[in-house]
Amino acid sequence: MATEVRSFYTPSTTAHVSQPIVDELMMSHGRTRNLVQRCIDHIRLQYYRYEVTFGVYVMTPGEKFVANTFVLVFLSLLIWASLLYFPQLLFRKIGRLVWLLTGHSEDVAALFGIFEHVYISPATSATMPTSSMAS
Image (cartoon, rainbow, N blue to C red; front, side, top):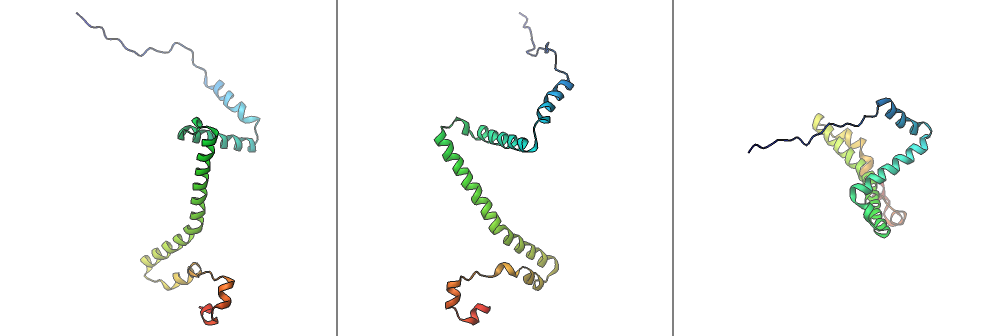
């Protein structure tokens, strides 16, 4: 008994759309839209990708609100912390790199010394002696 081997691949018999037609369809949408509309469309596309990737699209409106609020709070805290702490960290690491390369740290300390001052509130400055405020 002989077994017959068949391929599951069948060549496509449908006619393909030519490249100029595809280009025309893609460009016709972009011609009539200005920069603001394209930016809004890009933001909507990114939000759609976020919803589909993380499964937010299957949530109820209340669940979407909680999930999106959590993401926005997390991202805003991340951005705030990076803006607050990253410059200090960057200057310290640059100072360390300069010290490693040159062996001198006096000029680096003078250059980056502005980040090492402690903030003194007006209420505590009135009670502090003048000799400690000058240092």
